[in-house]
Image (cartoon, one colour):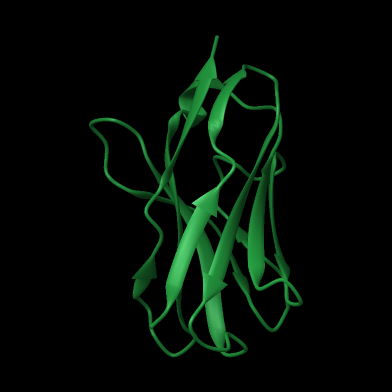
Length: 119
């Protein structure tokens, strides 16, 4: 059974940085796509970034391009989201997700971690 567990959320001032990490377990992920999403209060879930476990160029939403970086660490079975130059509008619950490359929808989700950016 695939399990994803996020860590690293918290409260930060605008302009600051946070690093989120997602620990993945339950299978090998060599043919998987890993991603981060977020959901602000009262809004729908939003795609942030994705990366293939096997490598290749990451994909980013325009709202975070140039500020956020997704990376994976195969030896640790984790993937991270480095968030720089944070803005109050980045406040949301952040979720990591995973799915086989052949799937369009994400099948596996973490429980979410709160990120709050104060102005």
